[in-house]
Image 1 (cartoon, rainbow over the protein chains, first blue to last red):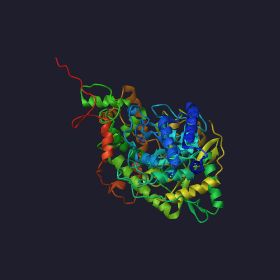
Image 2 (tube, one colour):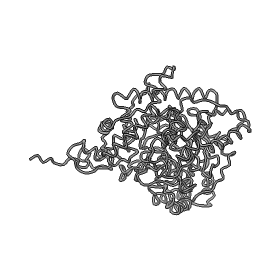
Image 3 (cartoon, each protein chain N blue to C red):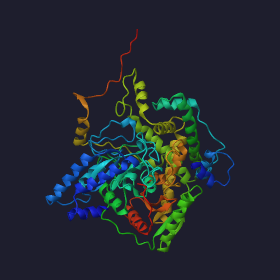
Image 4 (cartoon, rainbow over the protein chains, first blue to last red):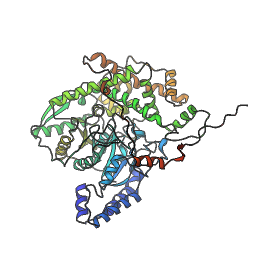
Length: 476
Length: 133
């Protein structure tokens, strides 16, 4: 089912919004015991929203563009009256008091919220195993991780528990799980989507992005959630416009960063990606090698900046301003320390790394050096985009890996983000589109475009989607 | 499986362990000059971050952070390699803080969830009485 089919069905009265909602809630009941994509299911709220839409349609009111579209929401994004945990014990009992701007936009467009999805605690992780409430399983193969940190969102779309979802991408947290679960996931240009009402991980990198089964649906959601918001000073005046057509490939120059095919990339992923590049070349694209020489340093710079910003952002969870309160203490210092026990292991590790990187004597060597690399990386990208219209490559060096494999090895987990963090550091948009499978697991193609070239990005992604062979079995 | 994958990709298996290959294969740097962070440093950072670490956690954190910080040293390398001139603040130059007026509705929503006493917000009691003699 697609958004367009829902629109047609509602208009022609083939089905009602309530019927669509009930059918997806049924899927959730059926699949959740195996997948565990959701932390909260908002059945009552969803049915109520659906009924409102149906009664508006009966009254002959105009049908808004996402009317009756069932969606799920990463548990780091606030929806009024619904619990919001960010995957952490720290916020286990927190209920949101207002809607995030993106949720307000979706509500106004008629989308129906089905629930909140599982995630790595505060977005810190690449597998959804660092959730305080148990891992999500990859619907394509239940013994594998769904990727992270927005793993619940990607899995909920892949398992057909909802039609579209919103995740949040700080270093690949939308594109990676999209690729692992075989769905489309997009990270917008920094500033095109409001971060108001989104629980912050690293404020200069965070950006909300949509998941869907098709590029068209993903584009549709992006159009609705993007635009200026007075509550987020980093958001910019932006209007996407109407849907784009698939790109005429002839004459398009595709840059292929050679560093993304270096030793370490799973050879079976490389084979799939090269196959797709070959097909595009046959269709008339000019496929050219380009260089992003600071790929390895970029990952280090990313983790310095991510942990530094996270350690400041998470200072507010002291049990007094926000979060878990552990009872009575003799001093404020004692109370803070005791309350912050509610953080999980990876969160503590990142707060420690960030605090260290910002501490006297180390600031120059780590934080400042990372900002310089970030600056140089932007230059690398403008150089690459002076030669190519878009860049293409793998999303990650790895295929979905078995649950438990990397949990105990932070560096091995960080490496999963190798090819995705650069887009966040430089602020450019990117998308992961399914292009088939390797060893029976989904493979995504990452497409990157210059700042604010979302129309180009979606247009090229639609062509890739048409060419790709994405027949693989679903585990559930 | 990770280990298998790495050994499969490695040119030779000389028993140097998984950490060595992680760096060698993916990060292009040599593990030989490892700079260790000390347990005392870990404890100092924990106190700055208002975190309490048990003895075994300190041990584990020292090793794990040592590994990651060691990898971060590629940043220093990139500084000496670069002849580009960049602003000392990097991408953050020109950044300025902007205060945002909260909308009346949102302020009301935030306040409605709290318990208030005239102009003050009530929070859970934090301190217990100290019993000095």
